[in-house]
Structures are given as structure tokens and as C-alpha cells.
Length: 255
Ligand code: FPP
Image 1 (cartoon, protein in one colour):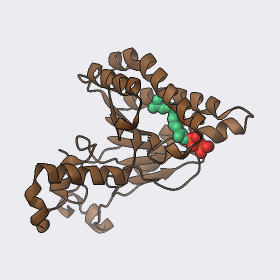
Image 2 (cartoon, rainbow, N blue to C red; image 1 turned 135 degrees about the vertical axis):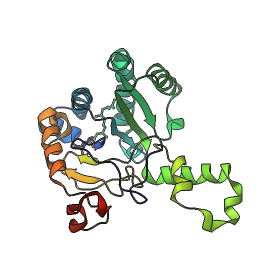
Image 3 (spheres, helix red, strand yellow; image 1 turned 90 degrees about the horizontal axis):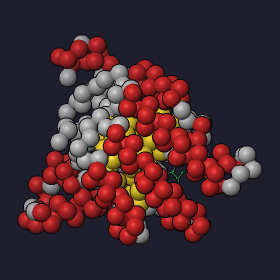
């Protein structure tokens, strides 16, 4: 397990080790061009492909994409089924390339709500890419940060029922291994496209010390240059993790 940002100072590098993205603005991209929203989602898939490749080339080790939130079920039924079809088609089409390119794909979220075909496909792609180590690509689907914390709590109590009567023994270190991305470091950088400035119930536990970057670009327009601009901004940030600037200037002794 990687150390928690509230318990230790995480390792830092010029390029984020873990990048988390909310891909927003597909619908508006399409509407502005008098196209159906489906066209925006289709272009969104192309942007996913571009950004996965760009992250691989830039040595990002973990890329987590918010594809479908637990609240997205509230969308019109046709749009929900379109998104499901798009996931199925994309997984079927991309599995060989992901395997070849050294990408390990995992899906986090409550996949029990998905149709059996999609669940089987997810399992197949996860198994076929499990040996890959270049880039850990995680798709958050039917995911919600609050759902994640609650499922972690349930798993923890199932594993250690005595904690229910020893409440003071419950701490971060006990809960964190049960979170759905326990195998990844916390995100260094979060990007949200589409102009909104909110976290929308994405990885709320893990974003505690993440740098938050918002851009007006719609997701279908987001490309390697836009990614580089976000990385340049990230490099300009002073990541203090609760310390003062003076401590940072003192170097490792200030840790
Ligand atoms: C947000 O745009 C986008 C989504 C809810 C779906 C994201 C899905 C993809 C990019 C395609 C599939 C991805 C994978 C990983 C296979 P929006 O519809 O909320 O846009 P709007 O805010 O302009 O309406």
C-alpha cells in the first residue's frame, strides 16, 4: 500500500504519478455543433484514446477516468443505454491495443448494476491486461466517493467484526485497505474539463491533498497539448501537505 497523504509526505515528481480526470462537456460540445449528444460521447471516446497514449508516453503510472457516476442513472434512459453501448463497444475494440501497449485496465464502482454482458466484458479485459505494468488505467463506472467509503466500512467490519465494539481502534490505516483503489497512490493531480469547478462525488477520500485543475475546454477537445498545460500548472504548485513554505525551503529536514 502507498502511504496516505495525511499520514506521511507522499513521493513527488515533475509529472503526476496518478492523474484523475472528470471528462465533462461531451454534451455541450455536440449541442454547440447542432449534433446529437451521442456524437459528443463518441468524440469523448477518441479523447480517451489520445489521453491514455499521451499519459503512457509521459510516464504517468496511474490514470483514473470518471466515466459514469452513481448519479448519472438520472439521465434520460436513451442516453444511459447509449453510454452502456459505448462502453461495451470500446472495451471490445480496445482490448488488444491495451494489452499490446502495456496498459492494465481496471474498473471501480458498483458494477453489479450493469448488464451481464458488460460485467463479463469488464472481467475479461481486466484478466487479459492484468500482467501489464506500464500504465494503470482505471475507469470509474457507477462510482461514487460516498459509496466507496461506505463499502469500505462494510468490508472492514466484515473482516474485523470486533471493531464494532472497539470504535477507537478504527483509524485511516484500518479503513484505507478496503477502499476500491487501495492499490494506487492518491491522485497528485485532478483535472476537470467543461468549465465546472466541483468534484462531483469522485474519489472524495483520495483527493484530500490532490491539486485541482479546472479548464473550460470540453472533453472532446482535450488533447496532449492541453494535458501538457495542466502538467505545467501542476509543476508550478507548491505542495506543502500541511507544512509551511519555510519548511519546504529547508529541504528534506523540514519533513
Ligand atoms: C460528461 O459529459 C461525460 C460523461 C458522463 C460520459 C463520459 C464517457 C465517455 C467520455 C465515453 C466513454 C469512456 C470510456 C472510458 C469508454 P456530459 O454528457 O456531462 O457533457 P455536458 O455537461 O456538456 O452535458
